[in-house]
Image 1 (tube, rainbow, N blue to C red):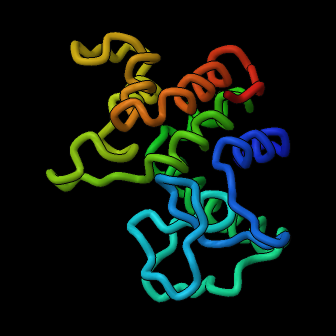
Image 2 (image 1 turned 90 degrees about the vertical axis):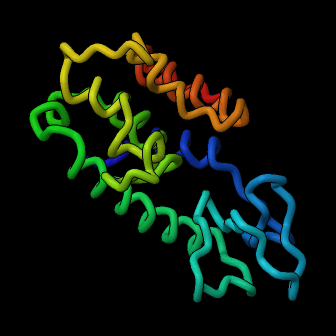
Length: 178
C-alpha cells in the first residue's frame, strides 16, 4: 500500500518547506528559517518536504521542485517499509486509504523506533498506537483510547495541530489539514 496522491499533497502541506529564489534550501526544522550558506548545520537541519539531513549528505546547492519531490518519495518508501514490518498485514489490507494516509504522516514524523530500552516512547515500534492498530481489543491505562495514543506524540505541544489534523483524517476522512 502507498499513500494516495491526495495524501501526498496533504502531507507536503503538513511538512512544509523553505524556498529561496525558487529552490528548496536547507532550513532549521525548529525555527523554519533557512540555514545560511557556510554555517554549521543545526540539529534538525531539513530540506525539501521534511527530509532530515544525514551526515555526508550535501544539499548546499539546494533542490529543484522535482528533486525535492523525488527525495520525498524515497523517504516515503522508508516509511512504507516501516509500516509493512510493524503493522499486521491483514490490518493493512483492510485499512481504508484515508487511514493509511494518516498513518504514513504519523510514522513519517515519529520514525520507526526499536526495541532498545532508550527508545521507549519514541517511534512506532514501542508505541501504544501500534498496539491499538494491530489489536482491536487492546486496552491501555496510560492511553485509554486510540485517539489519546495517537496524540501522545505531541513533542511538548509543538505538534498539537499536526496530530489533530492526522487524527481528523484517520477518523473522519478529513483532508483539510491544519
